[in-house]
Image (cartoon, rainbow, N blue to C red):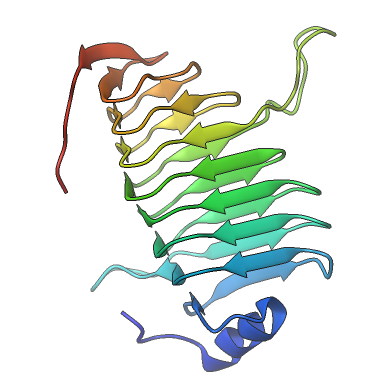
Length: 199
């Protein structure tokens, strides 16, 4: 798991965050504002390459006064593009996210414990534009514990996904999803209740 680490880059990240629990893999692009804060309570691995597969460009951008909190062991695979805007907060519990993540945090995104998030997932807490003058542009996203999110899912602003929920591949989540339900579709709606899943 730890081969292909660039020692200089790992050292750089350790100095910036004052944490030796963070491991950034080779060719990860980092842009951390001097006022950005990273707090890692356990192990955080970013830019992991799948065995025998091509490495994809990976980046983390943290702007002024942004905050990243990693609470448990969390792994994010290659191809991720994460941007945390000014004064925004990203909280990661534990689990993993597959390759080609697109995560844009303009206000607040919280991901719970023991999550399984597949490839090509987009998580975005802002529209960045208004359709009318009364619409709020950004609103926090909360993903609960033991949530399973399938590939090519898009999660939009203001959404809460309850503990134990499953989001089917290709879904667009623009409303709250109750705990222990299976949701699917564009937009995603509940298809089944009282679901359980195993890794």
